[in-house]
Image 1 (spheres, rainbow, N blue to C red):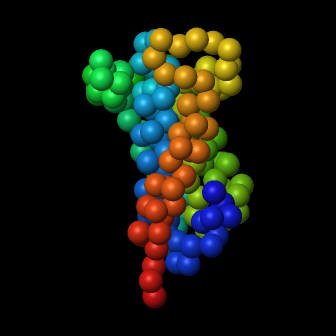
Image 2 (cartoon, helix red, strand yellow):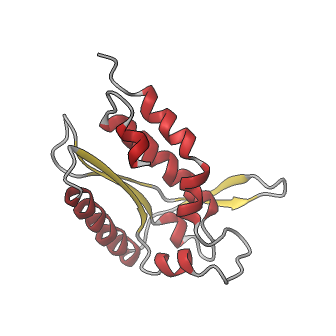
Length: 158
């Protein structure tokens, strides 16, 4: 993805943010659901850019469930518990630190703040009634063209 972005003349932070939000939304649809905490812990953070020198973030508390037709339906919107919020804040801070470490003018990081998210993501042998392992990775591969298009649409043409 980085190589593709480098080839887009005039790529902007707004385009990167749009691509990050696409990835977050699509990854949430693939995220396994037990209580909804893991899906609700998704976030997108960004650092830098022309009009933003402090970290910014977007999170969601939307929980999706697969419907009878195989599509996805938003079922609830809820507030995070204090522990979920603390986990999310820690993960977002790590995301911002990772974005800064990249040393780029701007960077966007998508992740999940639940303390156990890495285990659910990586354990491919576990069966899930709803969702799947590798939810973030799969969403990135399946939506690469959409994300690149979002960046291209917001690229500067000057």
